[in-house]
Length: 52
Image (cartoon, rainbow, N blue to C red; front, side, top):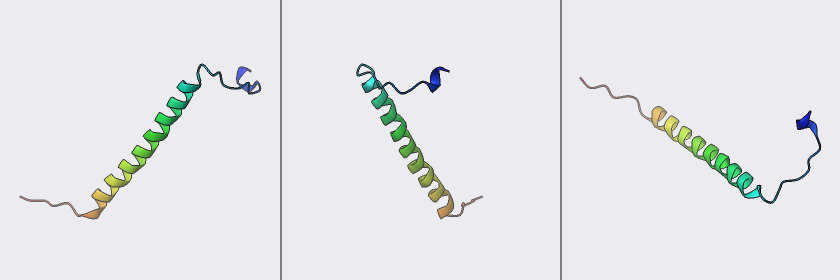
């Protein structure tokens, strides 16, 4: 199986691509968690106001 072969390192040619992808995923997770907590706080902080 090709995915079981030993690790042979990362090519210097593709290293910037790997790093930028990892940075993007890491930042997306951070922003997503911050957005989710802010939305939950705003939804749970005040009761809905219904006006007629």
